[in-house]
Length: 304
Image 1 (cartoon, rainbow, N blue to C red):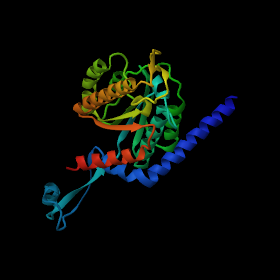
Image 2 (image 1 turned 90 degrees about the vertical axis):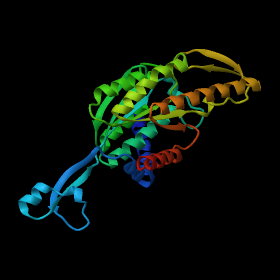
Image 3 (image 1 turned 60 degrees about the horizontal axis):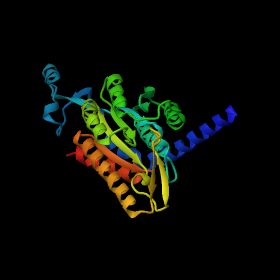
Image 4 (image 1 turned 180 degrees about the horizontal axis):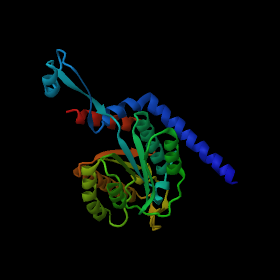
């Protein structure tokens, strides 16, 4: 039985690897490289000046010593550290279409990880619920990436609730150097939603100052609108609380939509006001077009 489970896990990891690595190779690798730059420029060598070189790159010490103009040559420090902070709380198990939110998070994490490895960057992983469940330090290599995919897909969390602040505090503590941090979650915050956002905002701002923080919101169509199917029991996957709704009532469906949209707008406002880049993805649609659009918009903005 255990051997069969292991085979199924390896099969699933392999499927994700094939699907996401092909996507990276065919579509995303160039976009990733152009959007996420290295930490700066490294000195490479000194060579003789040739017409067209920047005057400001002249090495005056070498020029004075040799009597011939020389310039400093630099190369871009390409290597980055990518950190994936992935929410594995109970609400991620929900999915009304072809896959759950957690499966989409796993694919997104895989795409980002393979893109990073192709560009010789390190990738680390933090899986969290209402506490940090697993931390894998940044490394390079295909075997490392396959381990990350396996953990994202099959790690069994102990917690059911979500605490984004715990995850952000953790990465700020363990990551000594600036890294590109993807916070991948459905942002289903416990308790009073607006109050939770108020507490989250300063943490987002601090994390974004220390790192390059990008928030990825994963949602499901049923979280934004209800079908007309009569009485429906809705259960909060994290708290276990249940509520019964008469979805045949247009006022009920309209109220549900309005509440969901109000929460969505407030969440976007808080994230953006903290200076954090934001990408929203849905289990009901391909993540490729919005991801490419996000890379394109970010590249244009940073090049201004």
